[in-house]
Image (tube, rainbow, N blue to C red; front, side, top):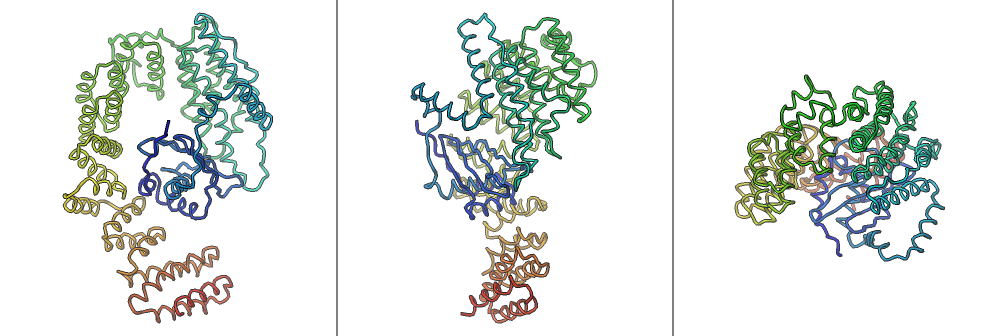
Length: 605
């Protein structure tokens, strides 16, 4: 099978990242920091050499539309993708011929002899002994699942709890390399928590297979080993990784308790255990994990208001007899997930509607083939673009593309912060279905909701002969928007692309951020030389006077751009005098002086 080769552009990559991350990623690419880039099927993996001793590991998932998901071992969490992922994607776009294309691992092992696979696995565990407990646990889980398939009435053998405890203890142990140069405790905490997620994934798999007992056998030693404040070894400053992990454990535990066939004694033991765990975590957060699982253990399926809600007798407000607790939605979703697996579809629908979980309700209707009912319900009950997008995507996945377009178009009339994502989805789907008018309308809506260069270019591509009229409308709309520091770079990109240089210059003057001014001067130096000269002098002077020796090369680059502009406007002699004065004034800056002399030689030869 040949994997899709998604069409990625630099504009699309830029749209995934904040301006600062994109700039830094571009620098990483230019410096050749991306190494070991391999594509296997729809997955790209690469290492990016950064500020730490070990390279950062990047993972990117693709499909025919482009980037589906990304991950990086760095701790970046400030919106958009990090600079390391930007660097990898730019490498993919610009140097595609140099990518190491390899078949997916699943294809490599599909026809391999069992003896060869055993040798490979043995060799792997010998070189990386820390993997042995995880492999042992996963093999036991797989064997248990096989035995369950052979005899669906027999309970699989007990999970090796001691193996799970050892794996957790290994993660909690002293981190190797703490004294090494470049050791990052924040990153180490995030990495260690990720190691525990492998155990949690095993429990989640068991729950999804309807085996709550096996899931509990995995979760109990996993969670218990982290208590008595042992988990604090995995926390660092403002890293939320361990707290997010506990929340995930809580949700899986709740579903496992609702799935397992437990005796009263077993349920009582779980109540006591969860109460203890919740009390410990309650000292560290206002929303302690294990609250949902504790509710599941205490109330189960016999909770009378829940029974009435599933029968359609009461609504969401009556379910709690007052204000719902902070974990109310997770409480309902845990039950919905179990109902779905057990095929209790009518109860699922009644409970989802009672809880006002519109996304879940309409999605289930579509899955049940009640598509017209889902569309009608959506028209009257959708309250946000995000809900409309969920229903539209579900309809498309069930081969109802025209209905999906209609729902998405309706969603654009709703208020909400997610309108840009819905409009972009509608634009792409309408274009693929040869609905040019709908696609163009959605392209304009995309730009209005979130003006980016990629959105502007998409509208340009779809507008055809109407482009000049639509172009003016888009630019007028953009000029009337409030340009804040956060969006200034994206606005400047658009105005420069549209050759609206005066507007771009005005924004650059307003913020004076060198990362904002630099692309402007590089674009307009020959058409607006006087402004370019003044702007470049200002930024070069600041670097030099502050003695930022590591940034002298940037100061020289500013001056070089000013020199090109001075030549255009007939002021090269004046510029040379200015640079000579800088050289003489700062003659003690031994790193700077030869740079300035070389710069002068380049313009006077």
